[in-house]
Amino acid sequence: MDRRSSPAIDATAMLEQVEAWSAINTGSGHLEGLARQADALAEAFAALPGTVELVDPAPVTAIAGDGSPYEKANGRHLVVRVRPRANRRILLTGHMDTVFPPDHPFQHRRWLDEETLNGPGVADMKGGIAVMLHALTAFEQSPAAPGLGYDVMINSDEETGSLASAPLIEELARGKLAALTYEPAALPDGTLAHERGGTGNYAVAITGRSAHAGRNPQDGRNAIVAAADLILRLKAMEGEDITVNPARLEGGGPNNVVPDHALVRFNIRPKSSRAMEGFDTALDSVLEEIAAAHEVAVVRHGGVTRPPKPVDARAQALFDLVRECGAELGQDIRWQSTGGVCDGNNIAACGVPVVDTMGVRGGAIHSPDEFLIVPSLAERAVLSARVIERLAEGALGEREAGEGAGA
Image (cartoon, rainbow, N blue to C red; front, side, top):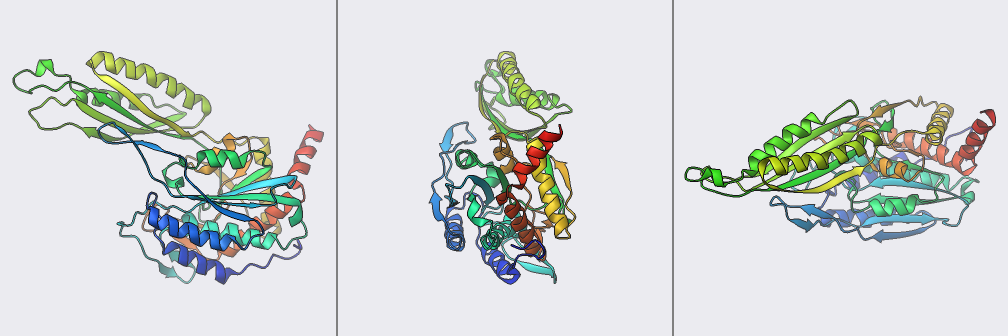
């Protein structure tokens, strides 16, 4: 690939793929749609000079409204391996699932103007998958290609926390020089997400004792009251480095019965590992207090699913490389911290530097207003192809060596 000119990118083919893929409903857990999408992606990625396989999801246990565990079904994940024995190897990741189930009214695409396409998953992240594929296809025409190996992973459960793909992400991240993830840009102007907070999802089952609300309420142990107490205490655990969102309270029954069951579901967003670990420890004490104060049994489920993603020197070097490549192409690359999470959190936790918003420009994701800025398909593919070429040439290692020499 000659740095004086951009690699050849077929923007028309990219758009056609995005439109075809977004016509397939891939709401998380919609196994039929996810299977169709996985097959379509396997066919498309077969254009690369590697092996393509569909990997079964890891088992995932979820908690029903009555507090009982059950196995949650997930789709298979796509894995592509190219030159696995190369000395330099990187990881590229994306996800095929969306937040729109088959019964959601948002199922169709429409043009908002000649450059803006509205549709389910067009930005998050079927557009990003097209960027990844075409960047790699362009990179394979580069003289540097034989020196770089890479793995591609497109999972089926990112929107629900990647619990069924987390072991696969960890396996594929091992030994990698760097990683690129194709979430849409943090802002429609192409701004990248930099540091990220973490997230955790919890469910607390509370079991009390039922009794008649009029004849002998004193013999009951009200699980709903205990749950309400817990919710207030959870909210009081917020601080500068962590937010707590009690999201759902389930349980109760007829008005004349003291309720003996409640389930509290909540989410935390720690900004640092210290806040994450501190909350987890404090929660155990709070649950013990709830159990004692209300004479109920308390069982905790869940925990942190994605740790916070700080940006260390190695990760910053990768960001700087992306910015330099953008400047070569006339693209102004900026970044900002965000409270959102993605598979980039998982990858960073493995010690691998990652830029996780290499996908399209667009916005309003997770809503019926989701849109893709269509010219960004080719724009971001060219950017990725340039970054991958520089990684193949050793740019990241040279940058780290230079920083060390000047320290």
